[in-house]
Image 1 (cartoon, rainbow, N blue to C red):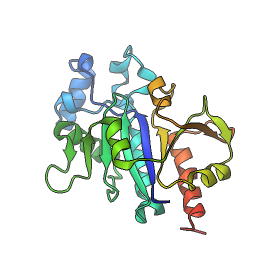
Image 2 (cartoon, rainbow, N blue to C red):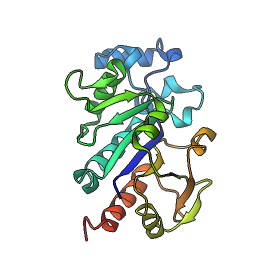
Image 3 (cartoon, rainbow, N blue to C red):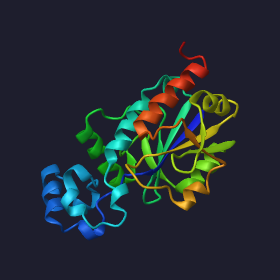
Length: 228
């Protein structure tokens, strides 16, 4: 196996939508953070009252899910051995290329500041080698990485497999792409299902993004002989 492509899919990451820019909750938070409201990251923990009534609100405003996922992936033994490449697909169909060497800020507020800068400039840092940058959609990922299998993890429609059989299956491919939802609740869009060659569910439990990542990353490290 060459390396694994992880696509964090329909990630709950976005700036404050236009219809909320004049909401007092948003204005106060933007002033407190010293950020233009247009580049403020929507966060349910701080913007819950403003978000009431937003379309598809149950899937939105949870950038903490992405933060936890990036810390797990980029801190893994797979990442240290350059065996994993991460992309972020947002709820608004934007795609972010994550440099394999990035170490995300552990402080959540610092992470939000980094994401605000990314949306404002299109890349971070502003100069030098980009550690995160926007790219031209899912087609960029497919064209750049040429995955030989596209696997969607889904608790709703996926065929149930054991963790062991899943790992045995994945490591047979040269460059598999594993798509993992990074939103709090709700279903994948039909367009997301359309990307997948296979839709699977690991075990009989509903697991959040961090839980499934912990299990998959560790199992892959064991399966590839990186840890014993």
